[in-house]
Image 1 (cartoon, rainbow, N blue to C red):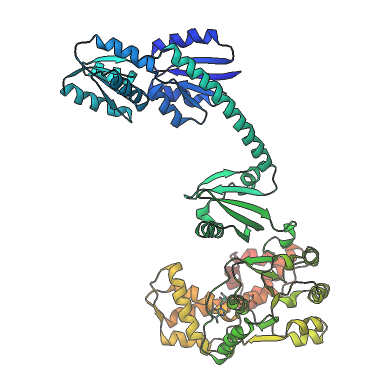
Image 2: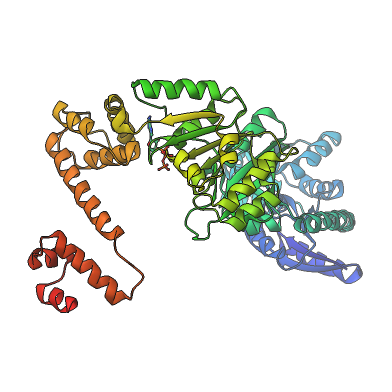
Length: 590
Ligand SMILES: Nc1ncnc2c1ncn2[C@@H]1O[C@H](COP(=O)(O)OP(=O)(O)OP(=O)(O)O)[C@@H](O)[C@H]1O
Protein backbone atom coordinates (compact mmCIF):
# COMPACT_ATOMS: atom_id res chain seq x y z
CA UNK A 1 0.00 0.00 0.00
CA UNK A 2 1.37 3.40 -0.98
CA UNK A 3 1.40 5.89 1.86
CA UNK A 4 0.99 9.44 0.56
CA UNK A 5 0.82 12.75 2.37
CA UNK A 6 -1.29 15.33 0.58
CA UNK A 7 -0.55 18.94 1.44
CA UNK A 8 -3.18 21.18 -0.03
CA UNK A 9 -2.82 24.94 -0.18
CA UNK A 10 -6.53 25.80 0.09
CA UNK A 11 -9.54 24.38 1.82
CA UNK A 12 -11.65 23.57 -1.22
CA UNK A 13 -9.01 21.14 -2.38
CA UNK A 14 -8.96 19.50 1.03
CA UNK A 15 -12.60 18.59 0.69
CA UNK A 16 -12.21 17.30 -2.83
CA UNK A 17 -9.21 15.18 -1.82
CA UNK A 18 -11.17 13.68 1.07
CA UNK A 19 -13.95 12.73 -1.29
CA UNK A 20 -11.59 11.10 -3.77
CA UNK A 21 -9.68 9.28 -1.05
CA UNK A 22 -12.87 7.31 -0.28
CA UNK A 23 -12.86 5.97 -3.81
CA UNK A 24 -9.29 4.62 -4.06
CA UNK A 25 -7.87 1.59 -2.34
CA UNK A 26 -4.23 1.29 -3.30
CA UNK A 27 -3.12 4.63 -1.87
CA UNK A 28 -3.50 5.61 1.75
CA UNK A 29 -3.97 9.37 1.62
CA UNK A 30 -3.34 11.54 4.60
CA UNK A 31 -4.52 15.07 3.90
CA UNK A 32 -3.28 18.28 5.54
CA UNK A 33 -3.88 21.96 4.84
CA UNK A 34 -0.77 24.12 4.45
CA UNK A 35 0.34 26.78 2.03
CA UNK A 36 4.00 27.45 1.07
CA UNK A 37 6.18 27.53 4.24
CA UNK A 38 3.51 25.87 6.39
CA UNK A 39 3.37 23.15 3.78
CA UNK A 40 7.14 22.73 3.80
CA UNK A 41 7.17 22.43 7.60
CA UNK A 42 4.58 19.64 7.45
CA UNK A 43 6.47 17.89 4.62
CA UNK A 44 9.78 17.84 6.48
CA UNK A 45 8.41 15.47 9.09
CA UNK A 46 6.79 13.24 6.51
CA UNK A 47 10.00 11.42 5.57
CA UNK A 48 10.53 10.25 9.13
CA UNK A 49 6.93 9.18 9.40
CA UNK A 50 7.30 6.63 6.63
CA UNK A 51 5.45 8.36 3.79
CA UNK A 52 6.46 7.18 0.34
CA UNK A 53 5.26 10.19 -1.61
CA UNK A 54 4.05 13.74 -1.03
CA UNK A 55 1.31 15.25 -3.17
CA UNK A 56 0.90 19.02 -3.30
CA UNK A 57 0.19 21.85 -5.68
CA UNK A 58 1.79 24.87 -7.33
CA UNK A 59 4.33 26.95 -5.43
CA UNK A 60 3.90 24.82 -2.31
CA UNK A 61 4.81 21.68 -4.28
CA UNK A 62 7.92 23.39 -5.74
CA UNK A 63 9.12 24.47 -2.32
CA UNK A 64 8.52 21.04 -0.78
CA UNK A 65 10.52 19.45 -3.59
CA UNK A 66 13.55 21.45 -2.51
CA UNK A 67 13.20 20.40 1.11
CA UNK A 68 12.66 16.63 1.02
CA UNK A 69 14.25 13.63 -0.67
CA UNK A 70 11.14 11.53 -1.29
CA UNK A 71 9.20 12.08 -4.53
CA UNK A 72 6.85 15.09 -4.61
CA UNK A 73 3.95 14.96 -7.04
CA UNK A 74 2.52 18.23 -8.27
CA UNK A 75 -1.24 18.42 -8.84
CA UNK A 76 -0.76 20.17 -12.11
CA UNK A 77 -3.02 22.94 -13.22
CA UNK A 78 -4.78 21.37 -16.13
CA UNK A 79 -6.16 23.01 -19.23
CA UNK A 80 -9.64 22.39 -17.82
CA UNK A 81 -8.78 24.29 -14.65
CA UNK A 82 -7.56 27.30 -16.57
CA UNK A 83 -10.49 27.20 -18.97
CA UNK A 84 -12.90 27.07 -16.08
CA UNK A 85 -11.38 30.15 -14.49
CA UNK A 86 -11.05 32.11 -17.71
CA UNK A 87 -14.68 31.46 -18.47
CA UNK A 88 -15.49 32.77 -15.03
CA UNK A 89 -13.33 35.86 -15.44
CA UNK A 90 -14.93 36.71 -18.75
CA UNK A 91 -17.87 37.91 -16.74
CA UNK A 92 -15.72 40.51 -14.89
CA UNK A 93 -15.67 43.99 -16.35
CA UNK A 94 -12.11 45.07 -15.23
CA UNK A 95 -8.73 44.23 -16.86
CA UNK A 96 -7.46 40.76 -15.76
CA UNK A 97 -4.01 39.20 -15.41
CA UNK A 98 -2.68 35.76 -14.41
CA UNK A 99 0.19 35.85 -11.89
CA UNK A 100 1.93 32.74 -10.57
CA UNK A 101 4.74 30.21 -10.79
CA UNK A 102 5.47 28.85 -14.25
CA UNK A 103 3.43 25.67 -13.67
CA UNK A 104 0.33 27.87 -13.75
CA UNK A 105 1.28 30.64 -16.15
CA UNK A 106 2.76 28.56 -18.96
CA UNK A 107 -0.40 26.61 -19.79
CA UNK A 108 -2.58 29.62 -19.14
CA UNK A 109 -0.67 31.82 -21.58
CA UNK A 110 -1.16 29.26 -24.34
CA UNK A 111 -4.88 28.98 -23.68
CA UNK A 112 -5.33 32.76 -23.62
CA UNK A 113 -3.54 32.99 -26.94
CA UNK A 114 -5.63 30.17 -28.47
CA UNK A 115 -8.87 31.67 -27.34
CA UNK A 116 -7.74 35.17 -28.19
CA UNK A 117 -8.40 36.38 -24.67
CA UNK A 118 -6.94 39.66 -23.48
CA UNK A 119 -5.47 38.31 -20.26
CA UNK A 120 -1.88 39.18 -19.38
CA UNK A 121 0.37 36.46 -17.82
CA UNK A 122 3.21 37.20 -15.43
CA UNK A 123 5.55 34.48 -14.12
CA UNK A 124 7.23 34.65 -10.72
CA UNK A 125 10.11 32.50 -9.45
CA UNK A 126 9.89 33.39 -5.75
CA UNK A 127 6.88 34.02 -3.52
CA UNK A 128 8.13 37.48 -2.51
CA UNK A 129 7.91 38.70 -6.12
CA UNK A 130 4.08 38.56 -6.15
CA UNK A 131 3.40 41.81 -4.35
CA UNK A 132 5.70 43.82 -6.59
CA UNK A 133 4.12 42.36 -9.74
CA UNK A 134 0.65 43.08 -8.45
CA UNK A 135 1.53 46.66 -7.58
CA UNK A 136 2.77 47.16 -11.13
CA UNK A 137 -0.43 45.72 -12.54
CA UNK A 138 -2.55 47.89 -10.28
CA UNK A 139 -0.76 50.98 -11.56
CA UNK A 140 -1.53 49.89 -15.10
CA UNK A 141 -5.23 49.69 -14.22
CA UNK A 142 -5.60 45.93 -13.72
CA UNK A 143 -8.31 45.02 -11.24
CA UNK A 144 -8.56 41.25 -11.43
CA UNK A 145 -5.70 38.84 -10.76
CA UNK A 146 -5.91 35.12 -11.29
CA UNK A 147 -3.51 32.75 -9.64
CA UNK A 148 -2.57 30.50 -6.76
CA UNK A 149 -3.31 31.01 -3.05
CA UNK A 150 -0.35 33.35 -2.69
CA UNK A 151 -1.66 35.60 -5.47
CA UNK A 152 -5.05 35.66 -3.78
CA UNK A 153 -3.56 36.77 -0.49
CA UNK A 154 -1.53 39.56 -2.08
CA UNK A 155 -4.52 40.74 -4.16
CA UNK A 156 -6.62 41.01 -1.06
CA UNK A 157 -3.99 43.14 0.67
CA UNK A 158 -3.82 45.51 -2.31
CA UNK A 159 -7.57 45.83 -2.68
CA UNK A 160 -7.68 43.93 -6.00
CA UNK A 161 -9.98 41.10 -6.92
CA UNK A 162 -8.25 37.75 -6.64
CA UNK A 163 -9.49 34.66 -8.41
CA UNK A 164 -8.08 31.32 -7.38
CA UNK A 165 -7.34 28.68 -10.01
CA UNK A 166 -8.81 25.66 -8.34
CA UNK A 167 -7.97 22.12 -9.29
CA UNK A 168 -10.60 19.93 -10.81
CA UNK A 169 -11.10 16.23 -10.25
CA UNK A 170 -9.25 15.31 -13.48
CA UNK A 171 -6.04 17.01 -12.25
CA UNK A 172 -6.23 15.08 -9.01
CA UNK A 173 -6.78 11.76 -10.74
CA UNK A 174 -3.77 12.49 -12.96
CA UNK A 175 -1.69 13.28 -9.85
CA UNK A 176 -2.69 9.99 -8.24
CA UNK A 177 -1.68 8.09 -11.38
CA UNK A 178 1.68 9.90 -11.29
CA UNK A 179 1.96 8.91 -7.60
CA UNK A 180 1.65 5.24 -8.48
CA UNK A 181 4.28 5.52 -11.23
CA UNK A 182 6.75 7.39 -9.03
CA UNK A 183 6.27 4.99 -6.18
CA UNK A 184 7.02 1.98 -8.39
CA UNK A 185 10.15 3.64 -9.75
CA UNK A 186 11.30 4.96 -6.40
CA UNK A 187 10.86 1.68 -4.56
CA UNK A 188 12.79 -0.18 -7.26
CA UNK A 189 15.59 2.36 -6.94
CA UNK A 190 15.53 2.10 -3.17
CA UNK A 191 15.84 -1.66 -3.32
CA UNK A 192 18.89 -1.28 -5.58
CA UNK A 193 20.40 1.33 -3.29
CA UNK A 194 19.89 -0.74 -0.17
CA UNK A 195 21.47 -3.75 -1.87
CA UNK A 196 24.53 -1.68 -2.83
CA UNK A 197 24.58 -0.18 0.66
CA UNK A 198 24.61 -3.64 2.26
CA UNK A 199 27.42 -4.75 -0.02
CA UNK A 200 29.47 -1.63 0.76
CA UNK A 201 28.82 -1.92 4.49
CA UNK A 202 29.96 -5.52 4.62
CA UNK A 203 33.14 -4.57 2.78
CA UNK A 204 36.41 -4.94 4.68
CA UNK A 205 37.63 -1.69 3.19
CA UNK A 206 36.67 1.66 4.65
CA UNK A 207 35.18 3.69 1.82
CA UNK A 208 34.63 7.44 1.92
CA UNK A 209 33.68 9.93 -0.78
CA UNK A 210 34.67 13.58 -0.52
CA UNK A 211 33.24 16.29 -2.74
CA UNK A 212 35.17 19.20 -4.23
CA UNK A 213 34.60 21.28 -1.12
CA UNK A 214 36.37 18.48 0.87
CA UNK A 215 33.09 17.52 2.56
CA UNK A 216 32.32 13.87 3.19
CA UNK A 217 29.33 12.89 1.05
CA UNK A 218 29.38 9.16 1.65
CA UNK A 219 30.98 6.75 4.09
CA UNK A 220 30.36 3.03 4.50
CA UNK A 221 30.03 1.41 7.92
CA UNK A 222 33.75 0.68 8.26
CA UNK A 223 34.61 4.23 7.29
CA UNK A 224 32.33 5.62 10.01
CA UNK A 225 33.88 3.21 12.49
CA UNK A 226 37.51 3.92 11.74
CA UNK A 227 37.58 7.38 10.21
CA UNK A 228 34.61 9.26 11.70
CA UNK A 229 37.14 11.88 12.83
CA UNK A 230 38.73 12.34 9.41
CA UNK A 231 38.58 15.83 8.00
CA UNK A 232 40.68 16.57 4.96
CA UNK A 233 41.78 19.93 6.37
CA UNK A 234 43.45 18.17 9.28
CA UNK A 235 44.87 15.16 7.44
CA UNK A 236 47.61 16.61 5.26
CA UNK A 237 48.78 13.38 3.66
CA UNK A 238 45.31 12.15 2.79
CA UNK A 239 44.40 15.58 1.49
CA UNK A 240 47.51 15.61 -0.70
CA UNK A 241 46.44 12.33 -2.21
CA UNK A 242 42.94 13.66 -2.88
CA UNK A 243 44.36 16.78 -4.51
CA UNK A 244 46.61 14.64 -6.70
CA UNK A 245 43.61 12.59 -7.77
CA UNK A 246 41.65 15.71 -8.68
CA UNK A 247 44.63 17.19 -10.51
CA UNK A 248 45.48 14.11 -12.55
CA UNK A 249 41.93 12.76 -12.70
CA UNK A 250 43.53 9.38 -12.21
CA UNK A 251 43.49 6.64 -9.63
CA UNK A 252 46.25 6.92 -6.99
CA UNK A 253 47.61 4.29 -4.60
CA UNK A 254 49.61 5.10 -1.51
CA UNK A 255 50.47 3.61 1.86
CA UNK A 256 50.06 6.10 4.68
CA UNK A 257 50.57 6.01 8.39
CA UNK A 258 47.32 7.06 10.04
CA UNK A 259 46.65 6.85 13.78
CA UNK A 260 49.58 4.52 14.37
CA UNK A 261 48.51 2.17 11.61
CA UNK A 262 49.55 1.55 8.06
CA UNK A 263 46.76 1.98 5.53
CA UNK A 264 46.92 1.32 1.84
CA UNK A 265 44.73 3.96 0.23
CA UNK A 266 43.39 3.76 -3.30
CA UNK A 267 41.65 6.83 -4.66
CA UNK A 268 39.32 7.11 -7.58
CA UNK A 269 37.84 10.20 -9.22
CA UNK A 270 34.01 10.04 -9.40
CA UNK A 271 31.97 12.83 -11.01
CA UNK A 272 34.11 15.61 -9.61
CA UNK A 273 34.29 13.94 -6.18
CA UNK A 274 36.96 11.55 -4.92
CA UNK A 275 36.32 8.09 -3.54
CA UNK A 276 38.89 6.74 -1.09
CA UNK A 277 39.31 3.05 -0.32
CA UNK A 278 41.24 2.36 2.88
CA UNK A 279 42.71 -1.07 3.42
CA UNK A 280 44.74 -2.13 6.45
CA UNK A 281 48.19 -2.52 5.00
CA UNK A 282 49.50 -4.69 7.73
CA UNK A 283 47.32 -7.34 9.29
CA UNK A 284 49.11 -7.61 12.60
CA UNK A 285 49.88 -4.05 13.44
CA UNK A 286 50.10 -4.37 17.17
CA UNK A 287 53.53 -5.88 16.75
CA UNK A 288 54.75 -2.56 15.51
CA UNK A 289 54.17 -1.05 18.92
CA UNK A 290 56.97 -1.24 21.40
CA UNK A 291 56.47 -3.34 24.49
CA UNK A 292 56.80 -0.26 26.66
CA UNK A 293 54.04 1.29 24.63
CA UNK A 294 55.94 4.56 24.42
CA UNK A 295 57.78 4.61 21.17
CA UNK A 296 56.79 2.65 18.14
CA UNK A 297 59.29 0.08 16.99
CA UNK A 298 58.44 1.05 13.45
CA UNK A 299 58.20 4.62 12.41
CA UNK A 300 57.02 5.95 9.12
CA UNK A 301 58.25 9.27 7.92
CA UNK A 302 55.82 10.35 5.29
CA UNK A 303 57.95 13.39 4.64
CA UNK A 304 61.47 12.65 5.85
CA UNK A 305 63.40 15.50 7.42
CA UNK A 306 64.59 17.92 4.79
CA UNK A 307 66.84 19.72 7.26
CA UNK A 308 69.99 20.65 5.34
CA UNK A 309 73.19 19.35 6.89
CA UNK A 310 75.10 22.40 8.08
CA UNK A 311 78.77 22.81 8.87
CA UNK A 312 81.87 23.91 7.01
CA UNK A 313 84.31 21.45 8.57
CA UNK A 314 86.12 19.04 6.29
CA UNK A 315 84.47 16.16 8.12
CA UNK A 316 80.97 17.46 7.37
CA UNK A 317 81.85 18.22 3.77
CA UNK A 318 83.07 14.64 3.43
CA UNK A 319 79.80 13.35 4.87
CA UNK A 320 77.89 15.44 2.32
CA UNK A 321 79.93 13.95 -0.54
CA UNK A 322 79.34 10.45 0.76
CA UNK A 323 75.58 11.05 0.98
CA UNK A 324 75.58 12.16 -2.62
CA UNK A 325 77.62 9.17 -3.71
CA UNK A 326 75.80 6.46 -1.70
CA UNK A 327 72.37 7.86 -2.53
CA UNK A 328 73.00 6.92 -6.12
CA UNK A 329 73.76 3.29 -5.31
CA UNK A 330 71.84 0.44 -3.78
CA UNK A 331 74.50 -0.92 -1.43
CA UNK A 332 73.90 -0.75 2.32
CA UNK A 333 75.34 2.20 4.22
CA UNK A 334 76.49 1.99 7.83
CA UNK A 335 76.43 5.32 9.65
CA UNK A 336 78.34 5.58 12.92
CA UNK A 337 78.68 8.34 15.44
CA UNK A 338 78.03 9.34 19.00
CA UNK A 339 74.55 10.11 20.25
CA UNK A 340 72.78 13.15 18.78
CA UNK A 341 75.38 13.49 16.08
CA UNK A 342 73.15 13.56 13.01
CA UNK A 343 73.12 9.87 12.02
CA UNK A 344 69.39 9.86 11.42
CA UNK A 345 69.64 13.13 9.51
CA UNK A 346 72.25 11.52 7.25
CA UNK A 347 70.02 8.48 6.68
CA UNK A 348 67.13 10.76 5.72
CA UNK A 349 69.38 12.72 3.40
CA UNK A 350 70.46 9.55 1.59
CA UNK A 351 66.82 8.58 1.21
CA UNK A 352 66.03 12.02 -0.18
CA UNK A 353 68.81 11.93 -2.77
CA UNK A 354 67.21 8.85 -4.29
CA UNK A 355 64.69 9.55 -7.00
CA UNK A 356 61.90 7.23 -5.98
CA UNK A 357 60.18 9.21 -3.29
CA UNK A 358 56.58 9.58 -2.31
CA UNK A 359 56.16 6.52 -0.14
CA UNK A 360 57.02 6.80 3.55
CA UNK A 361 60.52 5.99 4.76
CA UNK A 362 60.35 3.09 7.19
CA UNK A 363 62.58 3.26 10.25
CA UNK A 364 63.02 0.28 12.51
CA UNK A 365 64.04 1.30 16.01
CA UNK A 366 66.33 -1.58 17.00
CA UNK A 367 66.56 -0.35 20.58
CA UNK A 368 62.82 -0.71 21.01
CA UNK A 369 61.81 -3.76 19.00
CA UNK A 370 61.55 -7.12 20.75
CA UNK A 371 62.70 -10.44 19.34
CA UNK A 372 59.09 -11.62 18.90
CA UNK A 373 58.16 -8.46 17.11
CA UNK A 374 61.06 -8.74 14.70
CA UNK A 375 60.30 -12.40 14.04
CA UNK A 376 56.70 -11.55 13.34
CA UNK A 377 57.69 -8.79 10.92
CA UNK A 378 60.02 -11.10 9.04
CA UNK A 379 57.37 -13.82 8.89
CA UNK A 380 54.91 -11.37 7.42
CA UNK A 381 57.43 -10.23 4.81
CA UNK A 382 57.02 -6.72 6.19
CA UNK A 383 60.16 -5.23 4.67
CA UNK A 384 59.42 -6.65 1.29
CA UNK A 385 55.86 -5.47 1.27
CA UNK A 386 56.11 -2.01 2.69
CA UNK A 387 59.60 -0.61 2.38
CA UNK A 388 60.02 1.73 -0.52
CA UNK A 389 63.48 0.76 -1.77
CA UNK A 390 65.09 2.03 1.42
CA UNK A 391 64.86 0.92 5.02
CA UNK A 392 66.58 2.51 7.98
CA UNK A 393 67.63 0.42 10.98
CA UNK A 394 68.33 2.88 13.75
CA UNK A 395 70.69 1.83 16.55
CA UNK A 396 71.33 -1.59 14.97
CA UNK A 397 73.95 -2.35 17.63
CA UNK A 398 71.11 -2.65 20.13
CA UNK A 399 69.76 -5.86 18.55
CA UNK A 400 70.51 -8.97 20.58
CA UNK A 401 72.39 -11.84 18.97
CA UNK A 402 69.23 -13.78 18.17
CA UNK A 403 67.78 -10.79 16.34
CA UNK A 404 71.06 -10.18 14.53
CA UNK A 405 70.88 -13.72 13.16
CA UNK A 406 67.26 -13.30 12.11
CA UNK A 407 68.17 -10.15 10.28
CA UNK A 408 71.11 -11.82 8.57
CA UNK A 409 68.77 -14.52 7.27
CA UNK A 410 66.57 -11.83 5.70
CA UNK A 411 69.61 -10.33 4.01
CA UNK A 412 70.67 -13.74 2.69
CA UNK A 413 67.22 -14.57 1.39
CA UNK A 414 67.46 -14.66 -2.39
CA UNK A 415 63.79 -13.87 -2.80
CA UNK A 416 64.01 -10.77 -0.68
CA UNK A 417 63.33 -7.55 -2.58
CA UNK A 418 66.50 -5.60 -3.12
CA UNK A 419 66.36 -2.78 -0.65
CA UNK A 420 68.99 -0.26 0.27
CA UNK A 421 69.63 -0.88 3.95
CA UNK A 422 70.73 2.13 5.95
CA UNK A 423 71.85 1.48 9.49
CA UNK A 424 73.11 3.60 12.34
CA UNK A 425 75.14 2.60 15.37
CA UNK A 426 77.54 3.89 17.98
CA UNK A 427 81.22 4.26 17.09
CA UNK A 428 82.67 1.24 18.83
CA UNK A 429 81.62 -1.55 16.46
CA UNK A 430 85.12 -3.10 16.29
CA UNK A 431 85.08 -3.62 20.03
CA UNK A 432 81.58 -5.02 19.97
CA UNK A 433 82.51 -7.51 17.26
CA UNK A 434 85.68 -8.50 19.07
CA UNK A 435 83.76 -9.07 22.30
CA UNK A 436 81.25 -11.22 20.45
CA UNK A 437 78.46 -8.69 21.04
CA UNK A 438 77.87 -8.15 17.36
CA UNK A 439 77.71 -10.63 14.51
CA UNK A 440 80.75 -10.12 12.30
CA UNK A 441 79.04 -11.31 9.14
CA UNK A 442 76.07 -9.00 9.64
CA UNK A 443 78.48 -6.10 10.00
CA UNK A 444 80.40 -7.14 6.88
CA UNK A 445 77.23 -7.42 4.79
CA UNK A 446 75.86 -4.07 5.90
CA UNK A 447 79.01 -1.99 6.28
CA UNK A 448 80.23 -2.09 2.70
CA UNK A 449 79.95 1.66 2.65
CA UNK A 450 80.49 3.56 5.84
CA UNK A 451 79.88 7.10 6.97
CA UNK A 452 81.59 8.08 10.16
CA UNK A 453 80.41 11.31 11.73
CA UNK A 454 83.03 12.64 14.13
CA UNK A 455 81.81 14.05 17.45
CA UNK A 456 81.07 17.77 17.42
CA UNK A 457 84.08 18.54 19.66
CA UNK A 458 86.30 17.23 16.83
CA UNK A 459 84.73 19.53 14.23
CA UNK A 460 84.26 22.73 16.16
CA UNK A 461 84.27 24.77 12.92
CA UNK A 462 80.70 23.53 12.39
CA UNK A 463 79.38 25.12 15.56
CA UNK A 464 79.06 28.69 14.26
CA UNK A 465 76.99 27.58 11.26
CA UNK A 466 74.84 25.33 13.40
CA UNK A 467 74.20 28.11 15.92
CA UNK A 468 72.95 30.44 13.21
CA UNK A 469 70.85 27.74 11.57
CA UNK A 470 69.21 26.90 14.88
CA UNK A 471 68.50 30.58 15.66
CA UNK A 472 66.72 30.99 12.36
CA UNK A 473 64.89 27.66 12.83
CA UNK A 474 63.66 28.86 16.22
CA UNK A 475 62.12 32.06 14.84
CA UNK A 476 58.93 30.50 13.56
CA UNK A 477 58.48 28.65 16.84
CA UNK A 478 59.17 31.38 19.38
CA UNK A 479 59.16 34.71 17.51
CA UNK A 480 62.03 36.65 16.04
CA UNK A 481 63.31 38.77 18.90
CA UNK A 482 66.74 37.08 18.79
CA UNK A 483 68.80 37.91 15.73
CA UNK A 484 72.28 36.79 16.69
CA UNK A 485 74.86 35.91 19.28
CA UNK A 486 77.69 37.96 20.81
CA UNK A 487 81.20 36.85 19.81
CA UNK A 488 82.23 35.96 23.37
CA UNK A 489 79.07 33.88 23.80
CA UNK A 490 79.74 32.03 20.56
CA UNK A 491 83.33 31.47 21.62
CA UNK A 492 82.08 29.72 24.71
CA UNK A 493 79.80 27.46 22.71
CA UNK A 494 82.66 26.60 20.37
CA UNK A 495 84.88 25.58 23.26
CA UNK A 496 82.35 23.43 25.04
CA UNK A 497 82.81 19.67 24.62
CA UNK A 498 79.22 18.74 23.69
CA UNK A 499 78.92 15.17 24.95
CA UNK A 500 75.39 15.12 23.49
CA UNK A 501 76.69 16.55 20.19
CA UNK A 502 74.44 18.46 17.76
CA UNK A 503 71.24 17.39 19.53
CA UNK A 504 72.58 18.92 22.74
CA UNK A 505 73.68 22.11 20.99
CA UNK A 506 70.21 22.37 19.51
CA UNK A 507 68.64 21.95 22.93
CA UNK A 508 70.95 24.56 24.49
CA UNK A 509 70.17 27.00 21.69
CA UNK A 510 66.49 26.59 22.42
CA UNK A 511 67.05 27.42 26.08
CA UNK A 512 69.20 30.43 25.19
CA UNK A 513 66.61 31.61 22.73
CA UNK A 514 63.86 31.40 25.32
CA UNK A 515 65.86 33.18 27.97
CA UNK A 516 67.33 35.90 25.77
CA UNK A 517 66.71 39.40 27.13
CA UNK A 518 67.79 41.31 24.04
CA UNK A 519 68.33 40.87 20.31
CA UNK A 520 71.64 39.12 20.95
CA UNK A 521 72.42 36.04 23.00
CA UNK A 522 74.85 37.23 25.68
CA UNK A 523 77.75 35.38 27.32
CA UNK A 524 76.06 35.68 30.73
CA UNK A 525 73.11 33.64 29.43
CA UNK A 526 75.46 30.94 28.15
CA UNK A 527 77.10 30.82 31.59
CA UNK A 528 73.76 30.24 33.26
CA UNK A 529 72.72 27.50 30.85
CA UNK A 530 76.09 25.75 31.14
CA UNK A 531 75.87 25.85 34.93
CA UNK A 532 72.46 24.26 34.72
CA UNK A 533 73.84 21.58 32.40
CA UNK A 534 76.65 20.80 34.79
CA UNK A 535 74.24 20.50 37.64
CA UNK A 536 72.02 18.19 35.63
CA UNK A 537 74.98 16.06 34.57
CA UNK A 538 76.05 15.65 38.18
CA UNK A 539 72.53 14.78 39.18
CA UNK A 540 72.19 12.25 36.36
CA UNK A 541 75.55 10.80 37.30
CA UNK A 542 74.48 10.47 40.88
CA UNK A 543 71.21 8.86 39.91
CA UNK A 544 72.84 6.47 37.50
CA UNK A 545 74.73 4.88 40.37
CA UNK A 546 71.72 4.40 42.55
CA UNK A 547 70.80 0.82 43.12
CA UNK A 548 67.08 0.53 42.55
CA UNK A 549 66.80 -3.11 43.49
CA UNK A 550 65.91 -2.34 47.11
CA UNK A 551 62.69 -1.17 48.78
CA UNK A 552 61.42 2.39 48.38
CA UNK A 553 62.82 3.27 51.83
CA UNK A 554 66.23 1.93 50.89
CA UNK A 555 66.26 3.79 47.55
CA UNK A 556 65.21 6.99 49.30
CA UNK A 557 67.99 6.61 51.82
CA UNK A 558 70.51 6.12 49.03
CA UNK A 559 69.32 9.23 47.16
CA UNK A 560 69.56 11.34 50.32
CA UNK A 561 73.07 10.05 51.08
CA UNK A 562 74.20 10.83 47.52
CA UNK A 563 72.84 14.39 47.69
CA UNK A 564 74.37 14.85 51.10
CA UNK A 565 77.78 13.79 49.79
CA UNK A 566 77.30 16.01 46.75
CA UNK A 567 76.72 18.97 49.07
CA UNK A 568 79.86 18.21 51.13
CA UNK A 569 77.80 16.63 53.96
CA UNK A 570 76.10 19.97 54.56
CA UNK A 571 72.66 18.94 55.83
CA UNK A 572 71.00 22.33 55.29
CA UNK A 573 72.01 22.53 51.66
CA UNK A 574 71.08 18.90 51.03
CA UNK A 575 67.65 19.39 52.65
CA UNK A 576 67.06 22.54 50.62
CA UNK A 577 67.96 20.76 47.40
CA UNK A 578 65.63 17.90 48.20
CA UNK A 579 62.82 20.25 49.21
CA UNK A 580 62.49 18.85 52.75
CA UNK A 581 63.41 20.29 56.13
CA UNK A 582 66.51 19.30 58.08
CA UNK A 583 64.70 17.27 60.72
CA UNK A 584 62.93 15.22 58.05
CA UNK A 585 66.27 14.58 56.35
CA UNK A 586 67.80 13.48 59.59
CA UNK A 587 64.82 11.23 60.41
CA UNK A 588 64.93 9.60 56.98
CA UNK A 589 68.62 8.80 57.37
CA UNK A 590 68.18 7.04 60.71
N1 LIG B 1 74.93 18.88 10.51
C1 LIG B 1 73.71 19.16 10.99
N2 LIG B 1 73.05 20.23 10.53
C2 LIG B 1 71.84 20.56 11.03
N3 LIG B 1 71.20 19.85 11.97
C3 LIG B 1 71.81 18.77 12.46
C4 LIG B 1 73.09 18.36 11.99
N4 LIG B 1 73.44 17.24 12.64
C5 LIG B 1 72.43 16.94 13.48
N5 LIG B 1 71.45 17.85 13.37
C6 LIG B 1 70.21 17.89 14.17
O1 LIG B 1 70.52 17.40 15.46
C7 LIG B 1 69.51 16.56 15.99
C8 LIG B 1 70.06 15.17 16.29
O2 LIG B 1 70.38 14.51 15.07
P1 LIG B 1 69.99 12.99 14.78
O3 LIG B 1 68.72 12.63 15.45
O4 LIG B 1 70.12 12.75 13.35
O5 LIG B 1 71.15 12.27 15.58
P2 LIG B 1 71.48 10.72 15.79
O6 LIG B 1 72.94 10.59 15.66
O7 LIG B 1 70.64 9.85 14.94
O8 LIG B 1 71.04 10.61 17.30
P3 LIG B 1 70.86 9.33 18.28
O9 LIG B 1 71.85 8.29 17.89
O10 LIG B 1 71.10 9.91 19.64
O11 LIG B 1 69.45 8.89 18.07
C9 LIG B 1 68.43 16.52 14.93
O12 LIG B 1 67.47 17.49 15.27
C10 LIG B 1 69.16 16.91 13.66
O13 LIG B 1 68.28 17.53 12.74
